[in-house]
Image 1 (cartoon, rainbow, N blue to C red):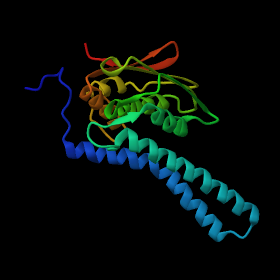
Image 2: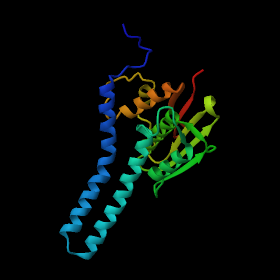
Image 3: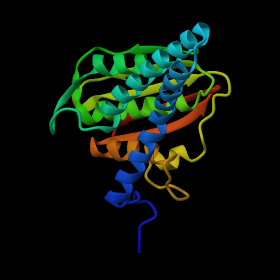
Image 4: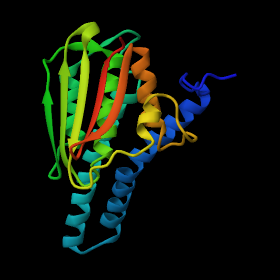
Amino acid sequence: MENPESPLALDPLDLAALLCSKVCHDIINPVGAITIGLEMIEDQTDEETRVSALELVTKSAKAASAKLEYHRLAFGAAGSAGASIDTGNAEAVARGLFADDKTSVHWAGERTLMAKNKVKLLLNLCLIAAAAIPRGGKLSVTITGAEESTAFRVECRGSYCRLPAAIPALLAGRPEAGIDAHGIQAFYAGLVARSVGMDVSARTENEAVIIEARPLQ
């Protein structure tokens, strides 16, 4: 009989398929916009329309590039097994993806080399926080401690700030319902946290969503 307190063991093939669906879903919008913009440039003779289409292509290409770079670190196999990643690179891709005219990013923590999977965890927690402020706001990332004592705190505030009810259970690896492409990212973040000996939690407090990862006691 399965222990209800034990995290769910997802079939590796299902995990891979759901993560691929998640990444493709995130990338398809800017890529689709590039296609539309190129078609407009090809079909239109009006110079003003062509300029607008070129602006759409440029903006969408930058968005697609930012998403690909972020997802490469957050989900991919960047570096070899056991490799370390510069947290400065993590900050740069986070600013590239999130910081715009709607969202500001505040990043606090000494720049250092950190175990790859801990960086992957941090970037996944940022994705969860950013999704909680769909209309933009402030995203604050704090890194404390070093090596085995490293801890993360990601906080977001903004209009319509909301933590989906399923997130805490998904992070804990005990989803109350099935896992789909929308929930797989939080479930994966929990898997990565446990792989590096960290406990992750998410809550709403004083109109902010706070996500924390700390070493297991």
